Image (cartoon, rainbow, N blue to C red; front, side, top):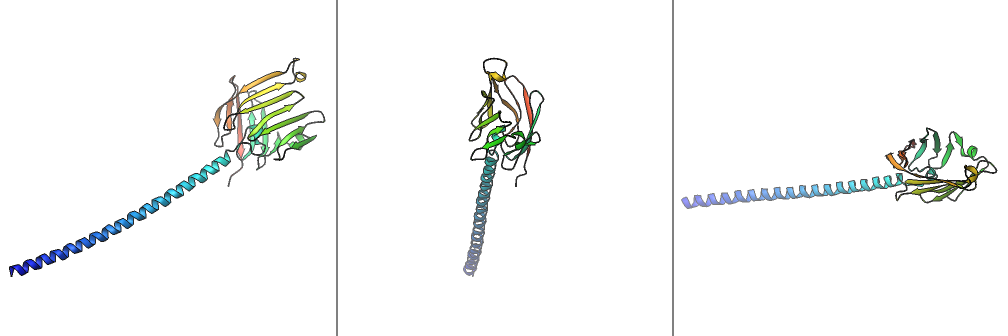
Length: 224
């Protein structure tokens, strides 16, 4: 009798152990499924975050591209609509642009009014010659990300020098003797240091090597 009861107890224990083991296996399998699901979700989230980061980087690169349209005339980039610049002497200068970055107006006058004797453009649509009358012509020479040289009055010119990011860092202005006070050309060099920049990389406040401050405000088109 005692032996039979022992066998029953052992059999019950074995059955109970099998049940516990089965439940444990099911629980482990469920945990494994949940872990795998979480890992898949994490991987998907990482892919989405990476795609968003790359898209934002592409967008920023487009924003900061130098030399679009005629913005390089004024050391500008991004969807510029208008800027107002105040030089070291307090003089203000205003220009507007279309959505492709081409120069529209100067101090309220259209370019046809500014260069009323005619305008010549290159294959990219950028101004290369602007005639204010039949005798006075301004010439513009371009490179990929901005203006290299502007010249006028025979021997007068402004040469522009940029850093690796396309920011204007030096300007050399040479004045023709006929326009100056000497028989020899006068040359003036300006080395610029940026004090403040906006999110597009355009300077809003800078100074030259003598500490003279220039400031400008920039208005942008709304981006989609």
